[in-house]
Image (cartoon, rainbow, N blue to C red; front, side, top):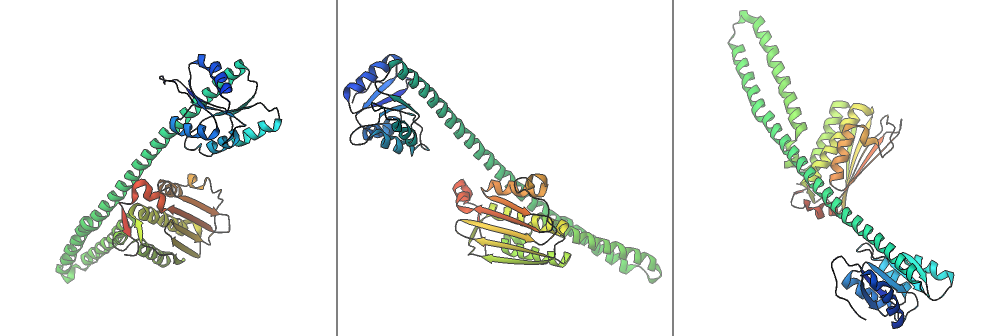
Length: 380
């Protein structure tokens, strides 16, 4: 085994053959091309060198002791997710099955012995060119993945800031606007009680105004709750969903049920908020458009994931599962929230057959992206 001093941008080629003479012959053919050439006497040594030097190309004879070329190529091919090294196989046997076996093992090209110098140089250049393209593709893919992860991180931050703003607005509506209306109502009631009996008409008009304030307060409370129910932070997802179902039944007559399975312990805040918004959107859509008599929410907890099913027996709609979320803003918002958590959203519906929305959020994948610092106790 011999080595040459590396030079900048010199492709590294490992020549693997159990015959020293064959290795030297191939070396002499390729040496004028300026490659860094490394020799190995069997497949085992070649694989060890691949791990140490990460070559740009591996030349493998098929028939060798210790480890033949086919086994070495197969083992190398099994690790191609870690790195990519094209393989040029060669043999002195002219059995056509050797070519098929080589490609099945993962070889990039094949050449017969005796080796034609010009053909070898041409094939090596072609494989090195393809190797460079593959390395560039993988580098670009890593950059793209890094950019995508940054976009996901920024999107999660935007959603978190969005939720924080909703909390602020909800508190201002409830505390500031609500208190101002309460003060106005009390003042009107005091003024109304001071009016003499002969001013009954004025008292009735003031009474109408007081009722309008009551209605306005109710609307503000509803809007504040829609923006961010206080119980989501105080009691957790399960109680809030249960309350939503109860309110849905009261306001629409739709019979709702909540079914739980598994042992809920910790739900990351971002996951909890996303699931709340998705369930809220699904229930709102069902109330407005489904014409359903019954709706059920099922939530399954496991160590690996949270699964949510929202099912109704309404009129349904034409759904192709792949494009439904893109056609409806509410469903699109659900899809975007779940995508940011690395989860999946499936919508199954057909005219007259109701609608089933299935959401899966993998907790392990979410934690690996840094969501573990935002966690709430599910049961509270």
